[in-house]
Image (tube, rainbow, N blue to C red; front, top):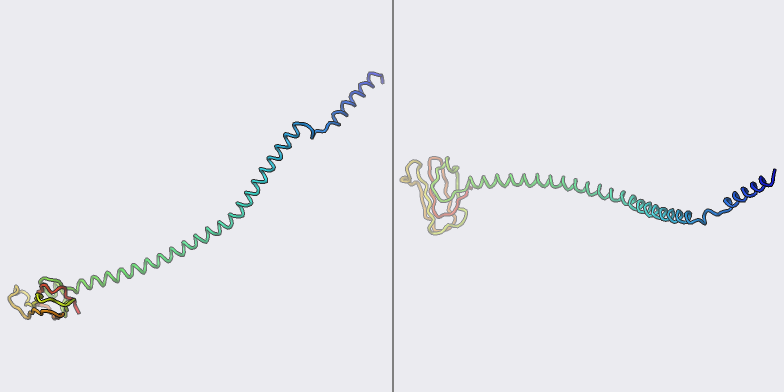
Length: 177
């Protein structure tokens, strides 16, 4: 080989050596990429930590939600039972109120068997001196008095049968016994 070739080999080998000998971690590009990698790695660790914390909380929150849903179902069933109980009591009270109303007489003239049921009635409270009642023969237009009274106090009683009218004034209400 000639000198020129030898010089080229030496120069080429030196260039390769120089390239191979340069430390890539000392470059600005490496430092920038390393800093970016460090930031991204930190962000990733933060996200993984948050994910782990949130993931661990999901199970307990799901359990809490399931417990609350179960409690709501139980409470709903209890409310249905209570509603049924209230409805039954309301029906019983309504029936009792209707029966009481059907068996209560107030001021006026009433035909037994049509307006009021036959039976014995007693004033609901003590009557005053202005109370007047009369048992009349039905169809007599009040002219055939079978029995009457101005009791002046106490709680008077009267027994009524079909074919009679009952007239009461200022005696309050009468209840069937």
